[in-house]
Image 1: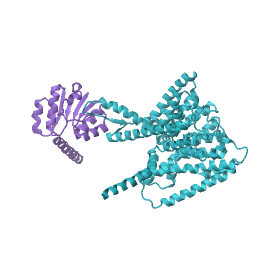
Image 2: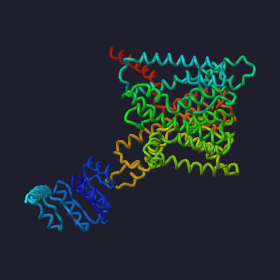
Image 3: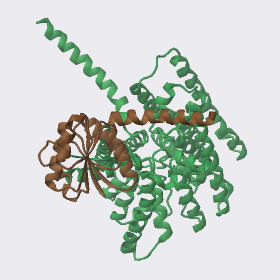
Image 4: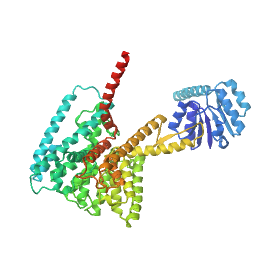
Length: 142
Length: 487
């Protein structure tokens, strides 16, 4: 599979980790040179040092061959633009992170699979761990 | 060091040599104490100062090394049966040339027939190379306490690979490995058909990639077994000591070909042999497997043993050998030359350059070397230092050729001179026959300076030589500024 990742934040980097380990081809579009270099140091991926708003940047990354486009920036405007462009080029799978859950319907109108409010999910997961422990504890007692 | 030679004199009953070595020992002791005494209370050394110290010490120590040659030659001169080989060493520059060639483990020699030298001098030559190979610096470090200064001294000599946690430990390990290989080499050569004396001398010079021999025709007079043995020892001497450490102590044999410079070493050894074989076949009509590969290994490892006179080779063959002597083998070993670590970086730089041209406008390049990814700045810095050294190297060769071409007899062609200069600068020691005691004084000094510069990778020597110029410049410039400010 060929994935184009937009944004090399925490989420983006971890995603690249997983994708490379499973043997997929990955390209990264990241406007901050420092972040781009960090990824380049650790992974054998193609890196484009540009913002998604740069003209024809997706064409440079061979978007026609891409199986999926994943937006992971902390700026919903950039994510939305990436998704819009992705739909324009006809990328089959469009996935995005959303930082503000009120934008969810904008993305969904484009047919994008979204992960709304990542922080809330992490919080929920953490809380679940606590509950699990308590459950185990009560089981142990009874 | 000279004291260690005394037993050899006694063993071979060469009592005339005793006084020479005792004087040398005494002088070096006095000088050493003097410098130690002067250096007490000195401040922490900066990189520039340490480089200058390295250049100075490698420039001064050969003067001590030259004393035995001078004294013995003068001492033996009145005797009628003294061979001309010895008599030539009455010339100070010849003696110095020999000593520099020894301590830089180059192997160019002023001795026409080394077999006629007294055994004590034969040993002295081999011993200088053996010590020079592993570095006088390392010896000093084993005596001195490990400190940051020591580390700076160490990297100024061009060997940055550390094997242990401290310098002292590293040096000890280097000596262990070095000693081990020397003993193994002696055994190997003895089995291969040399006498004990020859085996000892040749093994010491081969592992130091030096190239002084105790016979008249270098390794040419021995059978194929001995030749193969010497090839093997030379290659061992050309592999980085950190790699030796990795496979000897840690049993990681893969390091022998894993990093780019050793991979390049094996490739060059094979490819160079192949090309040179074809070249010689084309030139002389016969396949001379062993001699050709011996000469190539000797050139690439900058050792300088030979099995046949190179001057009768074709110009293209000489050019190939010169190329090998310019490149040298793995850095972190006893070889001279540019060292393959740098060559592989320069090669990579070309690859990177081509890749950058074919990149799309926003794409970034990944600088990968030896399974490790470099940041752009590191990559640039490495390329820069390698390229600058290459520049200086070629520049020095050009200057050397220019000087030599005026003073060398006209039967030697430009390719001969190029070969000789590349050999001196790479501290290799193969010779087209230009080097000899009848050589013009300018040529002697030029080649001596080349060996000195090449061994220390030019920078320290240039720093040392430009220091007085800088001082004078500052003096004049400073004055002018003052006079100007008056008006």
